[in-house]
Image (cartoon, rainbow, N blue to C red; front, side, top):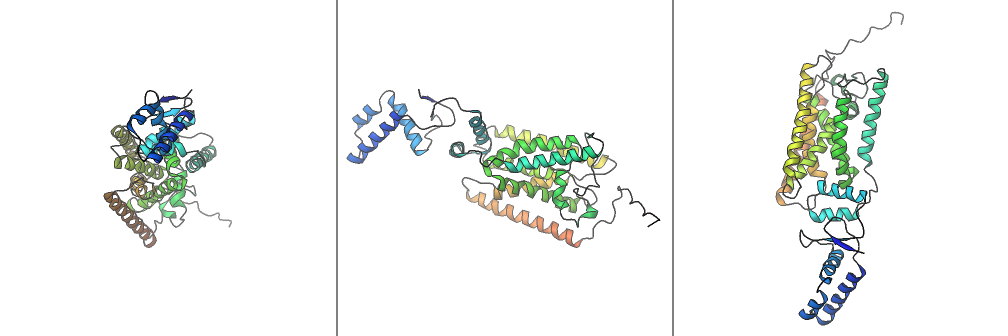
Length: 350
């Protein structure tokens, strides 16, 4: 038996309701107008609810916040997950309904999953190489060919690969937690290409900013990409603050978590003896997420001031990136890091 309830997710309306809609449609097409008495007879009693459900199922429109849908049974775990993602990421009710009806998890959010597995694998590799014991907070394996080092900045891959190396399991755990909690819903809604563009823009922006603002220290960790995802999500929440659930609570919670992490990074930068790790990637990644997130993440509709903001974000990111690239091209690289041990002398027998 089909029951009308107020919950997300809809299925085709009952045969009785469809028959009723077709009858009313034929009457309207023949006479040009529905007679009030006949309309009242057809929509009297329990048929009113069936008629409204059938109309809603046909045109996919929401008439009011109290509108309802037809369910054959309780929603599955997958349907509940999709509903939760839609409520957290999408601001408009019509977009949420469309997403819940169309999403099939094909393809799955493979970008965030692959990046997470890669970071776990690299961390396990270096932990195994150091005796199988991973420290809670460092040290950074600065001799790794993946870590960004200012004296090796001609090795261009380091501007991206530093993100898969972490300074201790606390650093790794925080980045993976935020990366999965924010990145998976974003990728499920916007796709792997758009989500990957935001993530990589944060990683690249973090290394470029560190090379300019903190040129004497190394860089490791996925904080640039993680903060880019977090900032892109918060930017979407701020632009649609009136339509997001618990917008103020989510904003305050995200800012509190980010402030604690940045504070820890600043403390580690200036108190640890060696090797110091730059915190510029946190701030630069967040700024990259704010700008690139406005550029590549899908929006249902754009008002005039949002389009102006879009062009301003594009210009700001392009200008900062161009300046950082030119700085790295024309400035002399660091010859030697003062906190790195000197290279061993060559063997006298050779």
